[in-house]
Length: 260
Image (cartoon, rainbow, N blue to C red):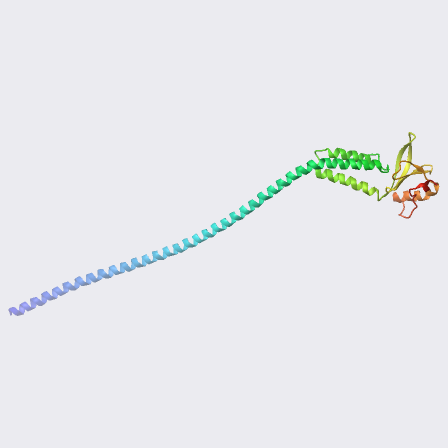
């Protein structure tokens, strides 16, 4: 009977012990599972953080590369600007050299242009004496050229252009047929005449009474012209004045036969 009681007591104690041990194991297991779950959550958070950092690193790399490209672009731009600046500096040096040459040329041009005017004046004085007087006459043109050469307010280029234009005007007289009214002094008396200029070959004066005189190039004398030339001279004057259409006319040639 005692043994039976002891057996029952032992069984109860074993049962209680087993129950006690089982409860502790379950609690430990729950704790382990909780820790595992926490670790899993922390691992997921850590992975998300890693992914975020990786994305940030990618963005930083892209931004860095973009900055490198901008730096390279700026470097190329600076190099181009340096090339442009060097080109501009060379251009400035070239212009300065040209300005220096222009100053030298201007110094040389002044006496040359004055000599050109002097030569033109000498030519006019030796030429047939047509269109000498008046504001637009050849002598007035020469005088204006002398004033122009010494005028500091006129550029050398403009002075040179005007002188060349005067030469061109003189050259055109040799290819032209002109007629104009003039007043000449004969024995100190002013006389009205019609002047016919035939290039640089001859000048003919036709008087109001119909008489005519002629002067050839290279001669300083006026010679009487036979009346037989009157019709041709009158026709030539009308052609020069554009009163009639151009046509053939006979002009007296230089030589002793003119006075016959």
